[in-house]
Image 1: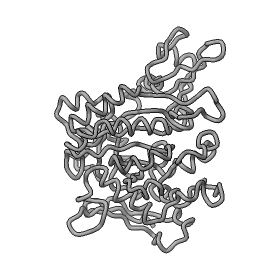
Image 2: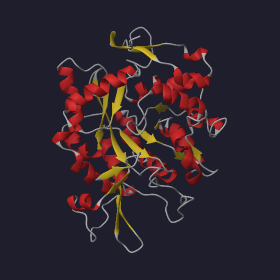
Image 3: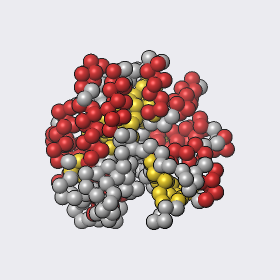
Image 4: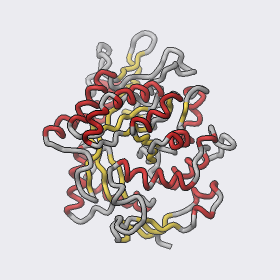
Length: 392
């Protein structure tokens, strides 16, 4: 048995699972991961970051079902929540399945397919470049993990966690390797998407991207930092000055409210959507599904309120960072099209753009902000064809 944390960065494995994984008392920590031990040095069964990968490989089997069938089910779910395009960061098998569905005439939403870091070298050899493709399937950035997650206490921080003074998180990818990967990708015309949650991880990610500025400009790449949750105030303006996209997930804020006392001090810019927008940065919104539900209207509500479902804290956590409805919609519609290099094709409704849009049962601009989460999708249109319609 192996149980995963909600953020996917920690696994609790029993002794039989550890045995099947070849993990024993003499095993060493893998690079960018940890086999957690107790005070006597014995394995606890807790695996963090890269140590989790072996569990995923063991769990993946033919019994898990046909990927195309699963994607069709996921597609129906996404369309029902008004999603017309996705930025997908799964493996090459997902890309092959999307291509197969399209060949069969079954692909009803648009896919911007990012690369896993393990695919980088083969992608370069094959001559792949970011933004290649067409209006249905296009190539994106390569995702690199700089650190872990807040809930798992593995995000890389400048200061220790308040409830664990010996822990500043973890470098999942060592900085020297991060610099190498960013430079290699940029030289080949492939953008990077760096997972960075902790303030130290974000600082190092921006440093690495700054070092690749020449190749970035030559290939007109749109690099992004995934999450950018906790920032040093001095790093907020660097996103705009470096042309780096802040790819963020509003639903993480209310989910993480119980954790913020352990992580976010008064000197950090946390979930700093408004501050980043004011600085001139492009802020892209998504779900980080399956960590949060792929339901944009819930994300929009989180961006407006910054509270838990119970309304805590009153007035929202750090309310100065709350957004207007127009700003939140920009993050879910216009900004993602820019991030994928497709702003001339989609993101807005105007002549010459793709006919992708949704119909809602209420006008969110006519509602109080706390009512926006109750708006429902009536229909979803992609390429001028109704792909979903809610039954009465």
